[in-house]
Image (cartoon, rainbow, N blue to C red; front, top):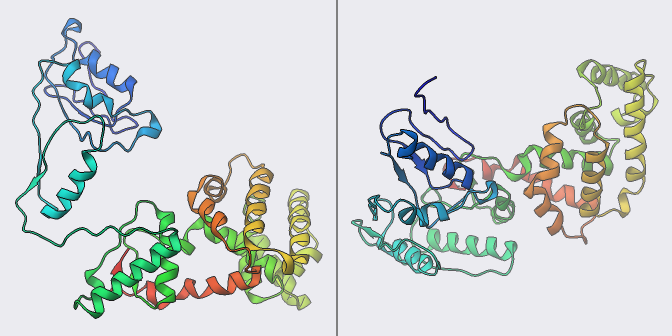
Length: 355
């Protein structure tokens, strides 16, 4: 269409309006920035009026090729542009702004600015160094106890912020061990996340297949990855096992299966699980999880891989979980430690502090 200049929202949130002023976030890659220059080039018959809004002190889309240099060098690329510094902060105390400024001033390349606020003074910022995730969580527990026992705060007055979801694991475990009530805002507990539940259910079957707990876990994993097993088959397995007086895994091994492709998939599943079950007493959690991840990902030949396996192959949560497990803890003991976390009262109360 003649004269149309609309660019829709792109991968990094790029937004350009068809008429009038145009806006562009700072997290853009070179291609997106080149598009902007084409759109505002007077030689192309375009209106050169546009504006951008950004923060040169942060850039979170580097993994997509975005470059903070687009805003740092903006003035030199568009020398006639006007720069307006928005340095008044409405959220933070002067103490927090000073701490931020002390960090930002070390940036080798930046747009010089002084952060200001009209807010009242607050507490000084304390920096606590820790050698590991475990000691960091214990330090947070000590700080919380100090606030509650000596300074009169309530649990609901306190919040703990973290950058990525996988970082909640050590905090959650430590809070529950020390009986500190909490709840997670806009997120899930570590052991409630799909990718973690899949691996833990595999471990539960391996550790104790002939149990009620093993029955529940088997139902959850029998079709992860996709083995083309549906609810009808699972119900038939339950009925068969009840008639034989055995648990589901034992019933799965002896049950007749008519569909050839399902029978093949079940045999492969049993062949994979049996050696692990036989050696469960000698296996450590980390080595089993590593083995499960590698085998499950490579054996998933379905046309569309399940979301569980995609998360298992990519999740930083699991990478951290694997690398930090204590190999002195046997598999069954490891599961016993984690089972209370799944139903703990401490993570459901809304009078608790927030994660």
